Length: 164
Image (tube, rainbow, N blue to C red; front, side, top):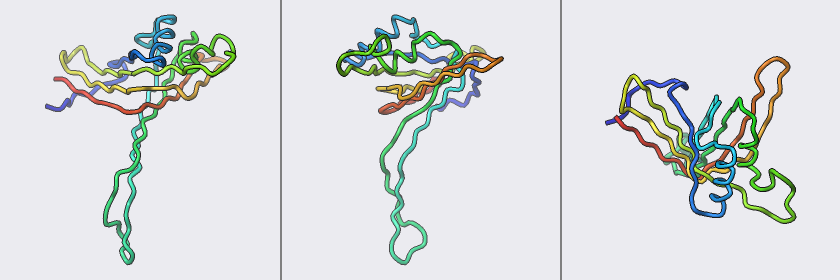
């Protein structure tokens, strides 16, 4: 049965996990160092899934006669009101502490977004983004508001799960 519950951002959480690969090990080191198994102070999380659908037009036809599936791209952003170096370390890996003499491994991890309402137990919506890499980091220091960082990311693929 499909989940039909309505959620707000207060019902959500964002957790990170890794795999046993060199890139996963680099991510796990950052997760352990900064204690960000569950990322706190998160706002404005977006996830985009784009499919490059290609229409086929026959000569003499104004409408496409077929739509062909193309490449799928998964990307998004995370806003965070807590600056401690965790997100920058997940982007740069060992290069976050100093400039390495050679190339280095960029951390890769999985992100799980869970929405569950305590008023409706047993009902959850879960998005899991696999093989995520952070591709941008921004820092914003306004004059009289909260310090914010934001990151952009890409994932290889996404899975969805509903319970309840």
